[in-house]
Image 1 (cartoon, rainbow, N blue to C red):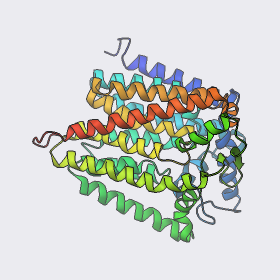
Image 2 (cartoon, rainbow, N blue to C red):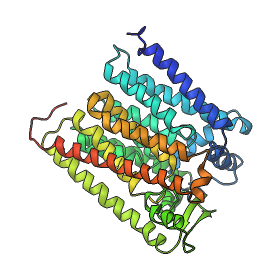
Image 3 (cartoon, rainbow, N blue to C red):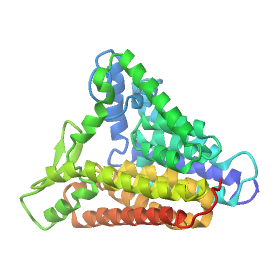
Image 4 (cartoon, one colour):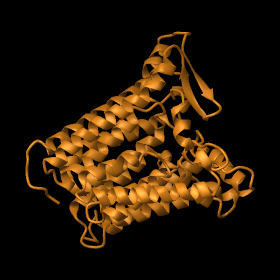
Length: 404
């Protein structure tokens, strides 16, 4: 197996090639793909290093408190090497997750396919796959999901840590709490670890700023990449002067502005909660009817993740990285059954790469071609959501003994 074209050696060579190419794109490609890392994260890390301002402690922050850990760690070789250190850190995390995916024993066909798919997905997505805080959480989430069935406490620790770096892994935690038979262990570990993180933040002097990311996200406007922004983008394409795209200097994002945008932005949170509740109810139904962990966890995690992406006022391109975790799990455990979502996620990654970072400016001026690309991307994401909900429903359509 090791000497075969699809064996371990070939996979690790491909891993090195893909990550080297992505790192080079982040450092040298047009469009400043590493912009948030070197232009924002580094500033936050340096202000804390100099004792001026600790984001999330001394002031409200858009991220959970543990996001500061990788941002600060990237300063270890100095400010001038911040971007390179960040990329090296993410590559190491990906390598650890890749190693867990391949495992130590005989390399199964399903895990081999999942590994090749993940590498292809990263390549299709482009530099954004490494160049944001989300890239730190994805390998933690992948490992967490891969070990969830056999080691739920370890999985809960990994996913909870990821959640306190970026909120989205809460979707995976919810899926684990529903799909696993040892759900109380998952909930208990997540609650205890979260309490510890909050307690440490309070001791450091954060006060209410420890949860400031909740209010920061709630107060955001409708970002240009959000699925909810599409009506206004097409309205701009049609030539209206009543709507436009503006830069928000507080949040550091481009947002659509016009009649109804504030109401649409406000509606995203309740719609997201409704969507999450509906997915949870579908998952609980399947679990109560005896759906096995391997049949339920991956599609349920994917459904939760899609809700977070679709009912979102932000919609940043790096959010597409979230899809890797449930799809890798699905391919590794269900094989060909996950071919459709794997293909859809890969297409979404490719469309995202076409838009960002090289030609992002065309979307910011509502170029019809790029608004169309964004529309197709959202449509594919909606199809992916529909697929995952159907599979979760089917997993509970027939009562059967609980499988593991």
